Amino acid sequence: MIAKYFRLTLFVVALIIPVAGHGQGLPYACAGSEESYGVTGMLNSVFFWTVDGGLIVNGQGNDTITIKWDFDRRTHNISVTEYTLSGCVGTPVQAALDINAPVADIGDEVEVCQDDLYAFDATTSYLTDVTFLWPDNSTSETYSTGTEGTVWVRITGADGCADYDSAYLTVNPLPVVDLGNDTSLCGTATLLLDAGVFSSYEWSTGDIVNPIAVDGERREPETIWVEVTDEHGCQGSDTILLEVCDVYLLFKDMPNTITPGDKNDQNDYWEIPNIELFPDAVLEIYDRWGRLIYRTDDIYNQPWKGESMSGKELPMDAYYYVLDLKVANVAPMTGYVNVVR
View (cartoon, rainbow, N blue to C red):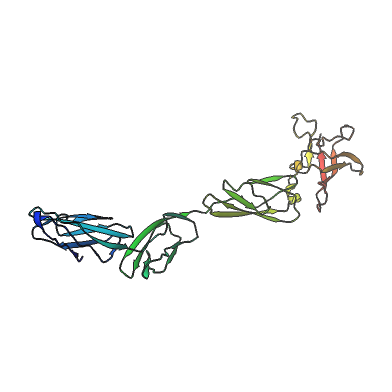
């Protein structure tokens, strides 16, 4: 550092009272810098300095001091008063200078979603041209990154004055959504699709709430998707494929024998698995001569017990059935059910 000197002149009259001093302007200083300043006075004098906007870090009482300037970009003043060895006090002498520096401001704590980039912008106006320096040694006005951590920039003016700023970038994970495995629904079966707890939802069905229920009423496969947004504005999504119900596969394990009246009171009626999914289904039972002996449109609540419509027990035999699920484009299923007594 080179000391900047300004004159201090004393005029002595009777009673040795100094009556005048001279002020002047000084070269600018950079904000945050340490600079030295001095005056020329009488031999063995003591000098009392006051500084506006700076901290005297060395030399108070001497003719030269070192000042640590603040970052207040404006005109600052230095004042010095000379105390001579003979007890005379000089009139304070003042000097003014401007504290200069570009303003670096890239924010404080900022957030970005995983896989996205955040663009830090250090654009600033200054009295000279400026240059930029970022962590990767790039020199543009902006800096983009998607890596969590501290980001900094140093802006330097053509006059050598500089400023520094930093911000912390938080990278938020994307929401994890799982609607489950692809599946099929039959009849009146419903499936509750739950995307989890988030701030907002957008479903391919047009729904904006969560969860939603879907049913088996479809004639072709359907892909349902959801896109969620969390409290950080990050988005995640998932899809599920709902296949058309294969009723023949659904009923492939349907039992074909009942044993009404046996001693263990088991298998007394024809229980058809999954029939509750088809409340409109109709069951017809025929004997070996093709005569209709039983019919019901409430199969779940009125399962066949090996009886006629009037409740008469039917003899042991194989009976032909027709099960019409009343599903569009699905032909009635047929086969034989045995009655064993």
